[in-house]
Length: 635
Ligand code: FAD
Image 1 (tube, protein in one colour):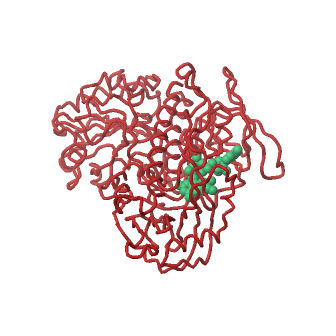
Image 2 (cartoon, rainbow, N blue to C red):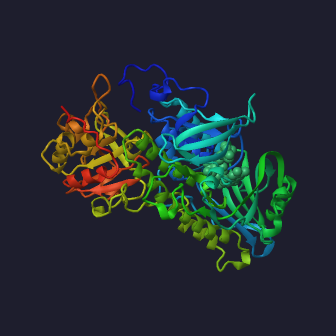
Image 3 (spheres, rainbow, N blue to C red):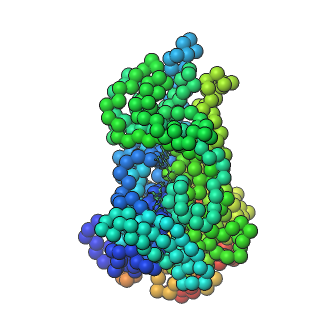
């Protein structure tokens, strides 16, 4: 964490100095805003947290509930999400309070007596080390709390506006604030009173029954209702030996349970299968009582028993596999003719079973994808055309998720005798782990993702996939750390230069650094406004292939030691060397002879891998989506 460069900070350095709209933020919801977000679920809160880092953008987030979510809903946090939390600065704290999944146990009917269950496979949760971060379980309410804290500590001092319900919206093209939104007060003295807010952009993050989705004419395609699960968060006494391990339990009678131990050491969640919901059910399944859910759990777990002492929360969770055809208000036949004004994210666009633990995770990745794009367009860094990439990138991901979830939930609902091999379920879980963990997302070439023409220069950083971190050593202070963890969700692009030669000697790297710092075509100069710190849009770092003691910091090109803040202090945290045991050049397949440039988007996806001498291609890549600002060369 870097601070003090604007003057001495004596308090919590996580609280950034207020700036821009954060200096005199009105308590009351204003009549005009840049972005209005509807819904404080994971999709809305991550988008708001990201936009809070853009103090020249007025963002407000409204919620019909009177206050924070207190209990219930999703709890599975995939490793990709923990990586994202790292970028927002709270991975360490949430890991500490969460339950960590290390393995999963599969229970099934005892072949000798199918009325009893026995333990089968016990695979490790992440046997191949897809991420350095763990797979966690923690309540959705806590995740939302952390995002609220990020917003409150941001330069814009943002906080949710509770007690406003979205009713309708209308788009009038050409107006300065084209989206007129009608809200109604749901708490306080003015309950029932209408409020009209005009916005430049609106995000509907208002969940599965999204009113924003309806208002832009998007429909959900897929199974209406598929399967119902009784969900309960309980404190109980049991003789079941794996009660503190994640389990998939299948009984001889065909019933099944997904057991999720929860944070804190005692609480656990059970998803108890209530079966397929027939079309003429008319909501009857939702009346299933907690007593019935507990009785069913006891039946499935035989010979073990469950004596529930306290029910913290329960619900009947009934979802279909459904996805919208687009994530914004531009109909498919009008794509490219106009820019979107209204977006939808999270459950408003896709719903799926809880079994793969995806609901909250994919919703947050939607918001992470959209937040910085809105910030760039509204702060004048990018053209409006950038916004069309949101629906183009995320709709495909949602469709892939629905397809995966159908396969997984069909398998989980199978009766024991229907499996060709009793280990089929466990095998599928292990074989396909990368998908639910959130690491199969690969964005195709677009204005934000280059063609993978030079992929062989860095085979471990697939273009379009998330930047997989690796250890390095910071040269200035010999600190071993993870390169990817330095990437904060501050809206900046990262440009990593992997050096070809020896530090201090002429090489392709030194030529590249000279061009970046001095040529008017250089993306750093072309796209950084005059007067702003050199790294305020593109954060450029170098990684040498030598050990840190062999890098003479006085011979490192100035580009990597930029001046920052009002005192024009030297930033020493952009120069790295290899880690003695885990060499990033080996781990990520980087060409030691040629070196390379790896460009990473603000949402942590690899946008380009280029040779060090492909300066024109680098400049052209950024020109596609960043507006020209023309900063003067480094003095
Ligand atoms: P949500 O978290 O649903 O957030 C939407 C927000 O919008 C809510 O705060 C809502 O109050 C607000 N809102 C809605 N309409 C309006 C309006 N008109 N005006 C203003 N505000 C509005 N997933 C799992 O993986 N496992 C589970 O066990 C599980 N259980 C769930 C139980 C319930 C009762 C619910 C509702 C969801 C559950 N989910 C579960 C789904 C998971 O919580 C979602 O996938 C995830 O929260 C999606 O995030 P989101 O931000 O898109 O939507």
